Length: 528
Image: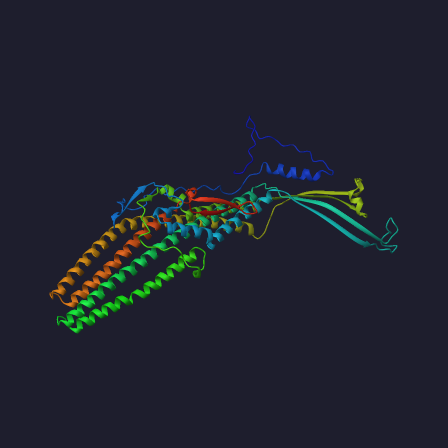
């Protein structure tokens, strides 16, 4: 059984511990030794946790071909490529790195997760205290009066009806962990602390991913604003052309009015984009742990961001090790398995040892008198076995086993979701290249169509209606290119997030270990 004290000699025999339990002032030490002797042959009941094997399946239903080159940026998949701890640096943006540095220093969600991890570690250490005896000291002083009736109580030796009593004692209590219930409790709390650690990693990964996505979204909005302003300039130029042709009698007022309406419609699309940009920058400011009124010094557009050329494709066996949510679910499964052992141990005999020693005297100085008449001590031990409790302990064991089954199902569900996320990200990134290439080709074709239509309009070979249609097609094509480019960046970020974000390579980031007053490490991550 796990936890069994295997003190084995060269002959393969477990040595025997012989303790002589005498009586006297040193009995407190002997109580502790007796507890240790009882713990030596102890075992740990309940199931022993084993890490579930990783699924041996491909990440995607079809082999990956690679995103290829689109808009002059090339990407390719690299199998078993490791992810750096500061994966956002692969986008080669100083503004993004500065923003990440500030967020990892000041974000309050990350600080809360760090505090939760310290709470979990403190809970483990608190439970470890159950391995040791509880020692308490006390001092009691009282003033009493004795009954003086002849048929009740004789007077005191001093002849006075009043006397003082001083008692000082040391009490020791110890519960040997014979069946490993305490060890299973510690094991469960350690697993919960491990789960909290990966909750911290998940918070870290979510924060960095959200910041990168918000930066890409800002770049996308700025791109859409630039595209809208470009089409507004074109439509104003065309409006001036139509007005000149109206004066020359080449077009009607209806054509001019239609162009004015198209210009107004394009100008109407600009304020919502500007509003979205303001909201997006407020979001980035909040993600860094600062107030919106403080402003944001960084500015993001697609000229300051660059796609990583090499994209990682992890092995299936490594994915379950890399995902913080899977590791947290695995730790919760471990904790649930240990709680089954706790429930089993609670149904077995419970051992308790206790004792106290001290002195009692009428005068306070006599507490320090070595004379034996002032000394008292007690040593006791008991074993308790529940015979009938209305099946309470049995049902608690069944509840713990059901909780273990529940944790196992949740772990499997988390693994399935993790593989789904990675498959979605890989296939989406692969198709994003096709989408951007198609959008770029459509934008070039729409620009050429608008240019030719304008030239023909100047020659009087086409109507103003055809010009309006060409303008709308070009505006839609411009926006499609921006959206397709933003999707390519966002899906690349989603791939890094789905693969775990490289937390296991945190040494890639400058890290200073800061310890709190209890000695627990506080994670502080800073950019180079």
